[in-house]
Length: 59
Ligand SMILES: [Zn+2]
Image 1 (cartoon, rainbow, N blue to C red):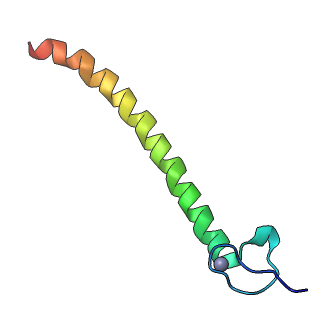
Image 2 (tube, rainbow, N blue to C red; image 1 turned 90 degrees about the vertical axis):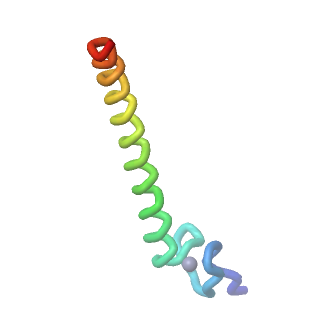
């Protein structure tokens, strides 16, 4: 019984974790982007606090 297929692109074959190397790399890349997005968001919130304090001077 060879029912191994990539669960993303359905390419036949035995893959670790059920995902072929290509899709694995893709998924990993997307996960990386997500991490960067989180970092960016954290950065932005920091900036927000900074500008909030500055807006007081603008008055
Ligand atoms: Zn695949």
